[in-house]
Image 1 (cartoon, rainbow, N blue to C red):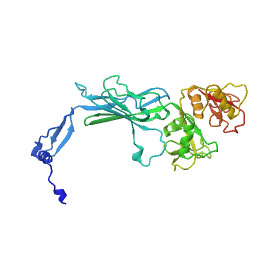
Image 2 (cartoon, rainbow, N blue to C red):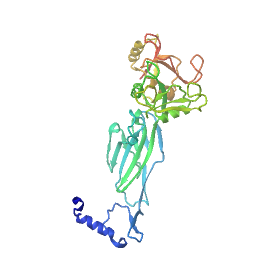
Image 3 (cartoon, one colour):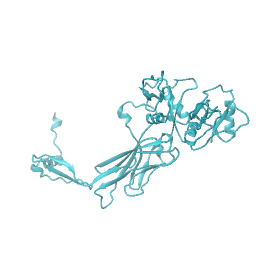
Image 4 (cartoon, helix red, strand yellow):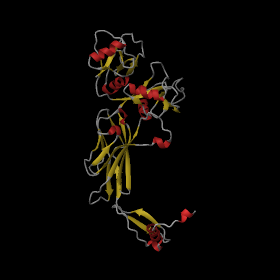
Amino acid sequence: MLSLLRPLPVACCLYLLLLLLPGGQGRIPAYNNGFHYQDISNGNGNGEIYFNGVRLHVESPEPAVSATRGSSVTLPCHYHYEPELATPRRTRVKWSWLPANTISAPVSPAASARETEVMVAMGNRHRSYGSFRGRVRLRRSAPGDMSLVINELQLNDTGRYRCEVIDGLEDESVTVELELRGVVFPYHSQEGRYRFNFFGAHQACQDQDATLATFEQLFTAWEEGLDWCNAGWLADGTVQYPITDPREGCGGVDLAPGLRTYGQRHHLLRYDAFCFSAAVKGTVYFLKHPVKLNFTEAVRACASDGSAIAKVGQLYAAWRLMGLDRCDAGWLADGSVRYPITKARANCGPPEPGVRSFGFPPWNLKFGVYCYR
């Protein structure tokens, strides 16, 4: 209790005394940052502080931006004052990022909202962080333009970006969603269906030059006609599957088309995976070879041609984004045999476009091969 009676510093007492003067007559030297405040008395000696001067506004004309992998993209962000200032002010801008894909589910709602710093700038000084180091800059095409330019877009750059402008006591921000144009495909283990826990599903997609799909990506794929009756992991730790044609064994005929969901599942439970692949920087092609090849021969043939055997995600991206159409089954890097069809025709599988799959045949069987250069 004695510690509570310790004398207050003189400056603190003066501050309290001025606040308690009748009629709000106390005068305290104010911190001046260019913003104007006024103390309005209500007649009882209590005041309300309100802002009556310059106001900082931060805006983006595009709440969502889409781009292709490997390209450059600009995330728009502009700020201005109302009323406009006669002379420029020194402001600080911070870009941060909330990834769309995560490799582990958050332990709490607070953890799920944690953002990663991308770039901080003040005046001509700036610093970028992590995987964005050396790939980002501010556009600065006009006064107040703090748009973020990202070069060499990577598969994991998708997510929500926050542009935060700070000027003294004022702090305003706006968010921009970055999406990559790509394709969602279901994927299962060589050992059969429902063999991936969450971490295995993440790794399996990564091995095929893809990432675990987000809910938004799977929903878009469903809107575009994806129908798959096996449940798979998504990046948020949920397990879902898309149905366009309701039927028994896939939620029943009484349910409307849509995404069937098991909700959040324990990470060690086993399902398939839904992967997302964006545009590839190189070329996927069917290797012209005089004879068909077993898997080992296929790997060597691509290497001899100055390429590597293509991955599943690369084949899907080439089919969907580059129009690859070939009615020849070929080996891929995971040991599966597939072929891409953009124009359905007789003797090339079902009457719809898609990537046809022969599954994972024994490695001694003979097929063609798809290479990636």
